[in-house]
Image (spheres, one colour):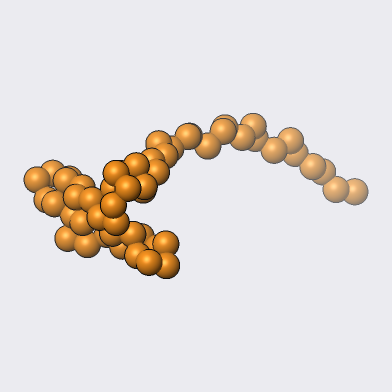
Length: 54
């Protein structure tokens, strides 16, 4: 005989903010993002990948 306990109720995952990289770059292929005084460059490559550099 096996006993099964009721699984704990699951809380929904929080919804994260979502941003379009195309909107951030305003149609270009690069944008600057500032965090705590540090400037980073977000770049969209020709292959459609994202690169974030300091």
